Length: 190
Image (cartoon, rainbow, N blue to C red):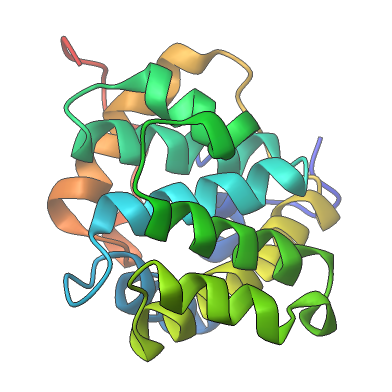
């Protein structure tokens, strides 16, 4: 049960953002800038970083939500998403993404845990300054988003079948007020 009165029909961060639309707008814009961008990292890679950091933070809602969005971008490859979530070093992903996930995991622990060696490793595997920047900001933002969701005990569906329909909507339309103020779409054959 949420610590504050929110619309029970809006799960997770959506209920919290609906509670304060004036903060939802810039948070949604940040999510779009970080996760929908196609320069450098792909949207799938960006969602995998968000998923991994949310998993490390034990934020059930966020790691399942963003894991499902990553599944949409990866043509339903849930096995890969689960491996990145739990053991990215053995996942069938690029060495560049592995190096960036290492950086993201360090950011999750605290910004000062990121070392020059971590950055050099990412560069060695082809990461650009923009890739490194975006990885650090995605990881930092998801620490905030995860704490927002869990700190207010947001309504978190445990039925994983409820996540794919919302994931499809986000993948198609992006993050924004239409996501935070509308009830959960009815699941289709997703």
